[in-house]
Amino acid sequence: MRFRTALAVAPLAAAALLGTAVGTAQAETASPNQTPATVQAAESPTVTVHLDDGANGFEVGRAISAINEDNRGEFVRRAVDEAFEASGGRYNVILMNLSQGYEERLESKRLYANVRWGSINYGLWIAEAGEFTNTGDGGYINWGFRGWFDREGNTVRFHRP
Image (cartoon, rainbow, N blue to C red; front, side):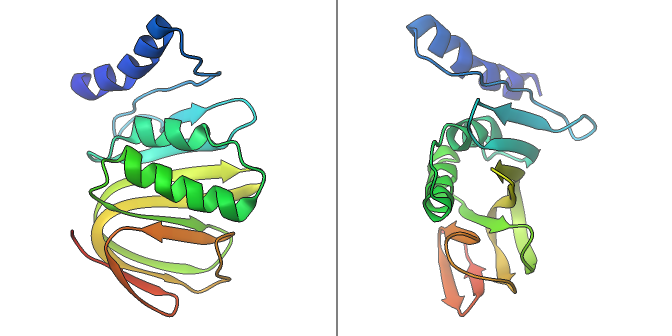
């Protein structure tokens, strides 16, 4: 856990040393028995990481919280891309509006986070494989995904790269 905490704090310290603005970002790393870590920036989405098993949750949260986007569909698309890149581009990513119906059967989950954009709450999953079905409304305003998958209607079957 010390290793993960050191990695989480280092980017903020490096940014401060380099004079890079990081806004009002706050970060904590939580063990499974602690409260979830939160990354939040003023006038930006809020990301609360509940599970981080090697997906670089701090960087994922920081990247998403830095998105300044008024268009909901564009926010979802950018958030998925940012999460994919920040987690190393080696896992499947899905972002889903939690007020819509869905069935999640993902395997080898690497990260789960809640993402709040305005009044909308999204779930963010990063996993190696599995299946995800959107049983609610589709479109980029409600869900987006990236990785290695086959899609049939509103069901996405993710596989390992």
